[in-house]
Length: 250
Image (cartoon, rainbow, N blue to C red; front, side, top):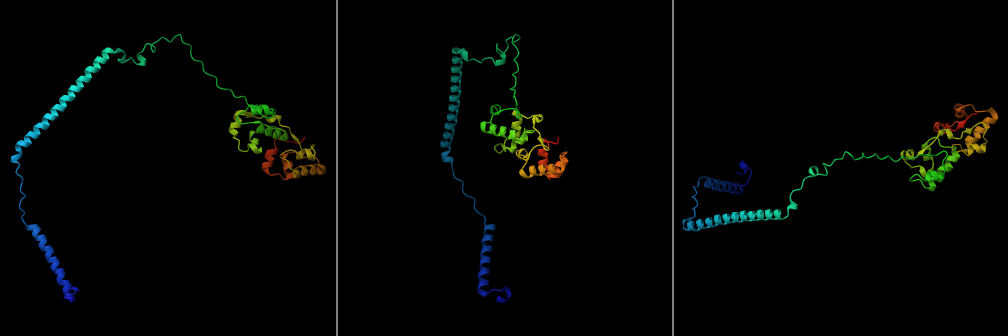
């Protein structure tokens, strides 16, 4: 038995017995004819059941009658109140009222309100008092603008306000609403006649650039144009773009 099923004889007998018991239970449940469950005899309580159902029907009828009576009482009260207080009757709507249907032919047309006109401040000839009238520009900002304008010789663009330390983050769109600049008022830098000290005083000139210009003039004469100025000084293009509105080669 062990060689055929791979298990000891005792285990085989126990397994076979368990399978036989399970099959017997399944066959018993399959073929056993169960007797029908007995139904309770309620004939002795028929009269009591009929009496209970009659009471439930009478209760439902009484509730419906009470609701109908209550609604009729409320309707009578509303009618009585409406007769005593006629002002609570439905009023005409606005479009049905006499005010809406009033003759308006003699009314004057409403005049259009004029928009507020902003008077811009021209930065090349204004003073600090003019600047302080602009919102968000106090005396400190106004003083810095005037000081830097005088060192430059005038603004040629509002973008130059960003070159002032305390105005580096100012919104240029906001500035365009209140300020303007006239490039014609810019004072030129006379490259061929100004001294080293005068050139160095300009914000766009440093000591090296001013010295280079003066030394070249002493050796070679006048600088004739922007191209020669850049060749002589080796100024980078960004600096040349900033200097171009200010340089004069007369």
